[in-house]
Length: 563
Image (cartoon, rainbow, N blue to C red; front, side, top):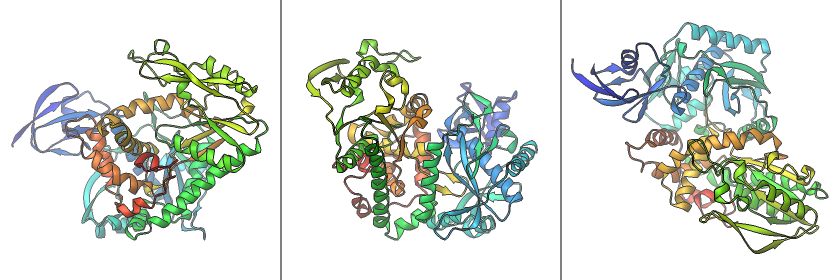
């Protein structure tokens, strides 16, 4: 047999194997004592452990703490859930709908929808949910293998028809490929858009917990993979996600396959107009809430994670407030940074500009209280190059109809203004909370949606290459988990900035940028994953892009905004 050399990045050693050895065989040989490895990067390409290595390669085995390892675990867990539900409720449809702070929100649905298009929910009792969990436990204990194969549409579609997965069939039809990668588990066939673990025995940590009309599939915590994520019943975020999911159904677009049909049949203009009208209505509803409290509210804070459209939202909300007779004024929270020498540092000794204490909280609170008392203040200007605050004669006073709008990552944290009367403040949380799914059992990450937005905007407005944006993203996400997400429920209103039409638009701009990343770049695996995801989405025409109005939140990222 022909021999190949495998360089293992985990222990920085070279090994000789026979050509065609599987990654699982390589793993078990190099790490005979075991290791919680779920997948591997082969020459910077993500592969399942069933993959046969045919040439000398560099291999890095990854576990749950790696983002791709975590996704591999969750995908596999979703297949076990799908398998259990199909056996216990063969006449129902499992929908793995969207991400929650504690896991994935799932529903069992009837085959027929409401007359308005919304799905008819099959409500599960706690006992039924426990029975599904027990069935999944049995499958994990049996350590059943996952097998990957190729099937044509004609071969695969009967399996999906049997499980009533109409969105999966629509997607395959819209792609028009000769064959598709499919996975087999205990006689059931399904499609998952990325590697799975070798067998169900790897999936020892998970839970099912009743949530709203369905249940939450909980998976391991980062850093404590033997425990599931704690259940966080954040009703405001869950309501926004559910609302968007219902709206997708009302529009008749619950999966990428249906969205592809819209693009291919030149119906983008209609969809863009409907989405923009929905946004305008939501801005107006929030402005009405502010107006109803105008006798007390004088400050509006807007917070949200990266690339959620906070800047556009603050401007469009200001327009809606003006329509009602209010006079919005804007102050940038970035002007309240402490001088550079007082900036806290992170664990690596770098300045932590995302820390709450990178802001001069005492000075901010003092100026806000002065404004609320009817006094005039001089607004500071922060010089980021010099790292110092200055004053340039910019004075402000809040008159009777004036309202102050400020946006920043800490705006929902009560510790930012502990000495300001909360009854005078209205807080808005903005984020791209997409509920659109690839198909019935493959949801779309809201984080991926925002990352694509940021890649496009960073490159267009700051000249930052996509590679750098991707490499920085994990740090951005850590900051969001620390500074933003814990305070989401403090919002008086939630604005969902996701657009049902935006994935084709993001593909149009992001795909050529992602293709620039070299195979030896540390960002290459993530770029490859995003390109694979975008490969399932139809590409719009330039005319489709042109119909997006200049006031759209999408224009904040792709350019051409007039706000």
